[in-house]
Image 1: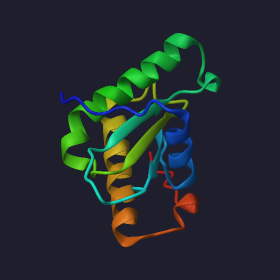
Image 2 (image 1 turned 90 degrees about the vertical axis):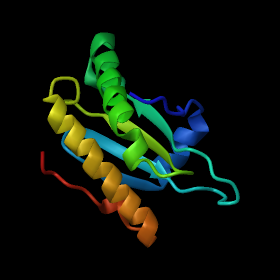
Image 3 (image 1 turned 45 degrees about the vertical axis):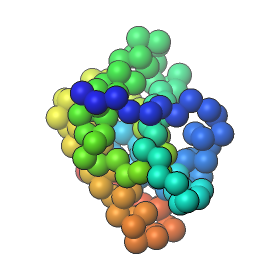
Image 4 (image 1 turned 60 degrees about the vertical axis):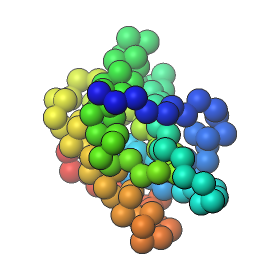
Length: 130
């Protein structure tokens, strides 16, 4: 399990929410393109679980499971200079770990491809396969 930089400031979360979004059954992934490409920084990851998901133990378990997946896949799938935000959904806390892992990997691949190709219509892009 590798260590990875974490997003902590609200403005960074809001910037990611405005740029690219990919929706899957178990997780929603947002990403912000780099502001300046002058220096290379490692990708930063943020985790969110809203009160709509349930009580504190459910929100905590949701974020803990997403962190565990990112710890496994960060080195392989996270692109430098990109801020990623993972938002927990209703099934994130109880779905099979492999399903969650597959959704996050597919989301990272899809967002990375959109960044490389310069796609701007990512807000409407969703995948309901679960």
